Length: 186
Image 1 (tube, rainbow, N blue to C red):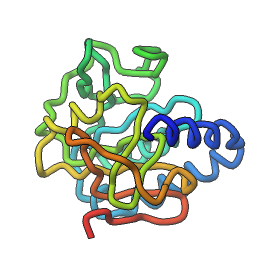
Image 2 (image 1 turned 45 degrees about the horizontal axis):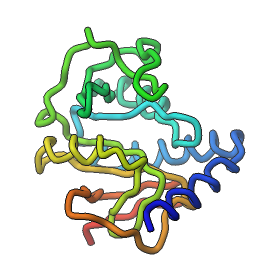
Image 3 (image 1 turned 90 degrees about the vertical axis):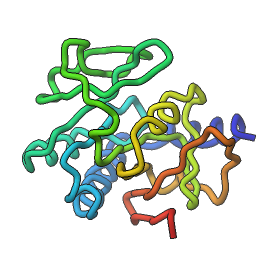
C-alpha cells in the first residue's frame, strides 16, 4: 500500500512545473513563518530540498534574519544528525545527492531543537507521513523530545485522505501547504 501511494504521489510531484513550485514554495514559507511554532522557536531543523520537494531556502533566510539558530540534517551511517548552518552556501552534496552541512559544522543535540520541518512524499490529515522508506526522519524524531514541534511541509496535492502507518512511524503536529495549515493534533 505505501509503495503504491509513494509511486502515485511521486509521479504527480514530477509533473509539477518548476515555475509554479517556486510560487507555492514562497506561499508555504510565508504561511509557516507566520505560524506560532516558527515564531516561538529558537532552534529550527530545516532540510535542503531535493528535486520535487518544497524548497526551504526562503525559510532559512527568514530564520537567520530573526536570529534563530538553524540546523540541517547530515546523514551518518543509518542515522541522521543535525548540524548548525550559518550560510546556505555552506551546504555540499552529501548522502543521496542531497545538500548537507559539512562534518565540521557544530552538532546540534536533538533535545535543543524546538521545531523540525519535515519533508515527505505524502501526508494525511492525521499527521502520518510517507517518506522514501529508509526511516531517517522517524529515527531522528524519536530522539528530539516532546517539546519539539514537528511540521510537515508539502504541496496540497501531497495531502491524501489516509495513509497506512506502522508503530515506528512518527506523526507530525502540523502540516503546511500553499493553501493552508492543518493542526493534526485536533
